[in-house]
Structures are given as structure tokens and as C-alpha cells.
Amino acid sequence: MAEQKTFQLEVISPERIFYTGDVEMVELTTTEGDIGIYAGHIPLTTIVAPGVLTITESRDSLKEASLLEGFMEITPEKVTILAQSCEWPDEIDVNRAREARDRAERRIKSNDSNVNMSRAELALKKSLIRIGLAGK
Image (cartoon, rainbow, N blue to C red; front, side, top):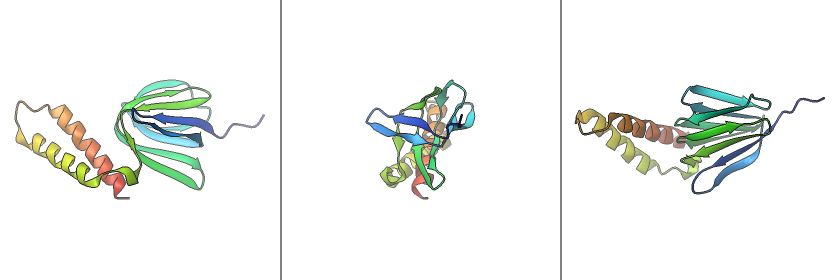
């Protein structure tokens, strides 16, 4: 019996079905670290952390997107990602991402006790991911 080389990937955000198709590999960041998924991966449910989603459709076709939090379920037939936000590089508003970075950096540097540092650091990380991906 031939080993299956592709699997169904579906990425859903609140605004749209971001991606659906057969892929060879998916790479992304979870709260436990980076993960790469091939066909036949063990079933898993995990929390997605902000990072770059890399979709390998075939040896010659690679796509990247910013993936900003969510959940992922891996089953024998399919990988489903429910994302808070997901954007292709050409959809990223770089000026808005830079403004978000600057705001987050100001909050972190302020040492204001009213500033939620965890939220500010997360906002900084998200903006840097978006800026980096848009700049590729």
C-alpha cells in the first residue's frame, strides 16, 4: 500500500476560510514550540502561538502567512486551524504593523504599573511577525 503524501489543510479565521487544500507539509508555532506536520501525523489538539504559517503544497510551491493565535486539530484525514487572524504577506498593512510595534515598544519602555506587560509584549511580537513577513 502506497504511503499517503498529502493531507487536507483548512485554516479558518473569523472573517473567512483563509486556506483549504491538499498539502505535503505545514509548519507553525504552538505554545509548546515549533511543529512540522506531514501526512500520517499523530492526532493532536494544540494552541497556536503567533508566528509564521508555512504551507508546502508541493516541492515547488511554498506559501507563508502570518498566523496570530488560535487552535489546531490534527486528525488522520485533516489538519484544521482556527485562527484569530491570518494574513498573506500582500494583505499586511505594514504602516499599521509599524504603528503597533511603536505603541508596544513605548508601553514596554514606560515602566508604567498600569500597563499589562504580557499584552504589550504579545502585541510587539505580533507586529514584528507581520513586519518581517511583509518585508520578504
